Image (cartoon, rainbow, N blue to C red; front, side):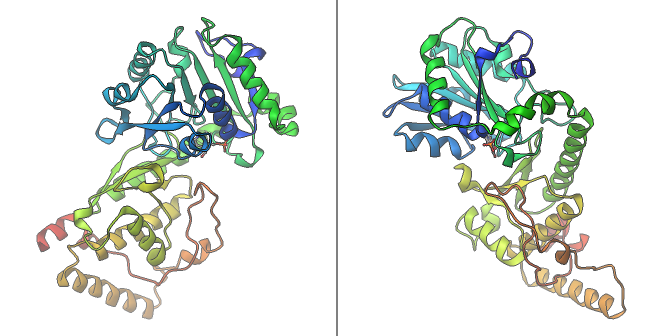
Length: 394
Ligand SMILES: Cc1ncc(COP(=O)(O)O)c(C=O)c1O
């Protein structure tokens, strides 16, 4: 394990590794070891909700530093620094990111380390999506860029190896100047023995899993996800009222919602709830990540479902946008009539894909956000209804 996670400039031994029951457990141990009730930690917004669930349960306050969508979700470093006080114990950095799919550059990681160093704070690096990056991007472990800021890096098999149920995660301790000292190491060790954690069968298999999984397995996964990301980005960029932010890695894409285009809804939550009710497309609202007016889509579905989901999202937005004037409805009606004619004439172009997906399930993180029920068969909006036409209607 130590060999697997060692990177240039950050060599590790077995003493620097703690095996855990998934990355969630790794995060739990790191937060518990570094902070006490009454202390605070800095976490990203939007961010994975587990950070606050774990901390708040221990009486630890969370302070959220903003990620900036216009800068590919880089951290707002001034905001981050402004949150630090005498009770701050650590900064959580999630790279590549859930929910944003962002991958930080070397310079940005160095800038974060500068803030940490200035305030004498360790980093808890959630690197569960390590190496999970699209072509043209590079994953850089934050620990490889510092000898002075101690880093607890959390990882696991869940994402890259696509085996969340195997519950295998780890903490690697990067502390070349011995700033943590024995206390933090002992704390992590003791906490890891409080409840017996990492699954022994998978521990036994770990050396083979790490050494012998062919590179082609990872390459194929990334190819599928990157293709879906491009597809969803291109399609959703065309939908009035939506602004997807192109990811560079992980499995997710955040889509901004211009709510002035959807005045009937009071929040992103209402939009997402109505989307699942009417179109059986399940996305997570920005609310789950503590940001308004976004929703997150998951990119791990087969490409044909991604097409279908984009069709449905587009149709939903056109039906609910304030541009849904009589003219738009009239155009939808024209489509409906021509679809009905097609159906009568026996064309099989409109084959109902929904049936194929109706047995899908979804896990707690929505990783298999698929279509659970057949929807009412609507005609697809034709190109007539894309942004240019809608603009003309106004
Ligand atoms: C950013 C992030 N960290 C940690 C985890 C938890 O991983 P595990 O299933 O290994 O506990 C997830 C799972 O979705 C995640 O997205």
